[in-house]
Image (cartoon, rainbow, N blue to C red; front, side, top):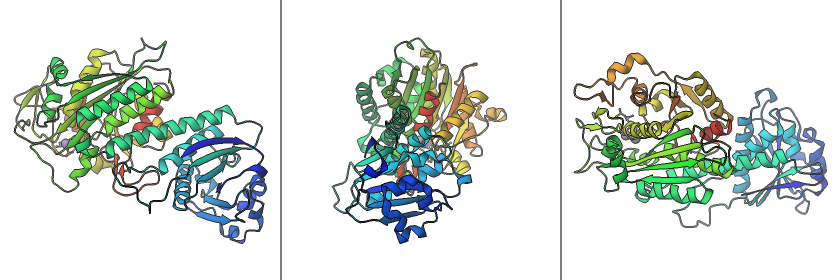
Length: 500
Ligand code: BES
Ligand code: MN
Ligand code: ZN
């Protein structure tokens, strides 16, 4: 769906469906005199009287088919005191999906209607664009065309009443669009079946996209990883016939080449069988999503490059496939991580922290980071603790934690802080090595985070996001069909846009 902008008097608006968001308690008629001018028939449409404006309510009203505006879709926003951008996002997402079901090509959203809502015009335009585009997402690459699948609407027009389209609003819509495209890229990568996306494939996809948008991209193959002494990352990948990769992306716009970079590190396990400690078969297929951390890092960087955000940002994607096999690493093995630490392996299913610890070491060896943020589908324990709507945030730096929480909330993602509980550090002691990579089951997300913390040097600002519960939706959500959600992409994008 293409976004358009138009600036004409409402009498000249022309569209198949006009979207009319309205609060509970307002009759449509009272919502705005603009509606009367755009769709004069609305005042005498009997069905309009049935609209209550409740949250989730959608009412399609018909005028004469030859009118400029033959249909108005009234979109309920609920009570004004409960309004937030999230309410608008969900309401518009539902409205746009309804238009798709009705196979309508042209939609029009009167921006003056948004001006009446708290939040500010630009912000609400941005969220409208974001929600409308994300709501239509579907992963159809591998399916034949199905004549029963309704086609997407072709255009969403933001209609203004004045004599020109305000630059701020146009730019806001573009920002929303770029964020949505980034999230959709992350979803596409994560929904791609694991046979079609080995570590090298993910690295190549990243390289191709990086070239297109002007990101610097280097790929460390097995030999280079050996050269970097990344024994932990290599151990995870060694059971697979498809070798691991570390992808290094860099956005360094002119004038910022020498800045201390924000370094984003993503877990990129293209498939997690659990390895020798193999997972049960039920739901194992969802482990194709075990690379969503890496996908979020790539996608956020793509958006930053496209909008030329004036900030240096480095992205690392730690990619491997965790497979059982004759060459696989085993419980009881001791590997030497890039930091020089020996690590005792007790459970080959705790592979994420192993690929991450070497990437974190690399981040601190190669750069002097302004901050390091890693993002990973790391532990089932985090999903058990927090469920499917909120991700775990581990961070001892209050300022960084607050910025991340605010960045997430801005785009409708949610983080909840969990403790890097020092008392549990003793649980990672090993009898044979410098550290053991797992602790007891209880507090599993904390033990994983503490293991990562072991590789962070004193004084380095660092945060860890555990997105194990939120990266995959079992059923359709307001802005996402079942499958990969793309969680984290927008949080990382907003963190960087906001200037960390
Ligand atoms: N990728 C999984 C974590 C996961 C679980 C993500 C469910 C999404 C949904 C991770 O590699 C894993 O298997 N972790 C183990 C760690 C344990 C062996 C210490 C887990 O959580 O069971
Ligand atoms: Mn695992
Ligand atoms: Zn995993």
